Length: 295
Image 1 (cartoon, rainbow, N blue to C red):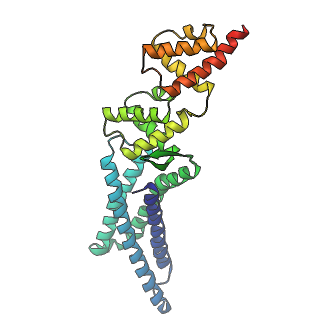
Image 2: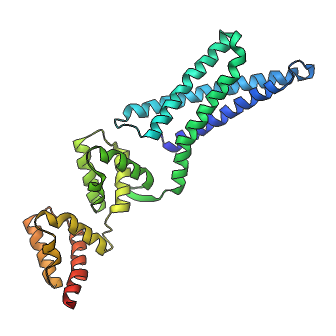
Image 3: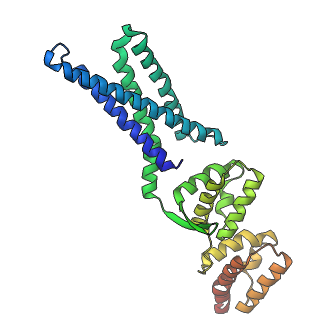
């Protein structure tokens, strides 16, 4: 189920809970001895009871969805999500105690409003913590469109960022990720290799979200030359065979730099792909070659 759907269900739970609490508070505040209040009292009792049933059904449905998600999640929950889960689970015994008092232990009937208010407070804490944060992040998020099996897919960049931060850090430092610049195809290959090592770390949808984020923030636009991208590729790749000083102290023309890059690729065919080659050549030709000519 989509996060926006579960968020709407959570907000519905909050609204139904507020309705139930409002009815019982109105009922408690009325004079139960007044004869002209009899019909209204009956109405508020039934309204509270019906909204309570709806609340319980909604709660169980949301719990079933969340438990399925937790069962599929092999990564430790962030602190916020863990607190949300604990409070959400704690609502269940509160509801059961409330039902038991109504059905079997009527001598504790006067304590029902207390249990109701505690339950409502727990719901009020959990809903903004999850659904509220999700809705706000969705409003503020950027989106990127990438192709998946020939169809355009809109990816929430913020969701992808969270996945990368939470999942990639389980195997290596995030610096290792953010030091790279790759094309979309390069990031897809990177994520595929990561999933091959740990198949449960990301499902298909999460992998696509991670690719979308990485392409948006650390991607190479193959139609646009960028000296910053070229420099990052040089810093990432060239030190594998020699020192960086060897690159930045050479004085070469544009043609000589192009020949050097081809020699590097001949020595290691997997060092640079075509897109990376163009970016590196653009940097060397427009930055180092120009500076060397001036000197």
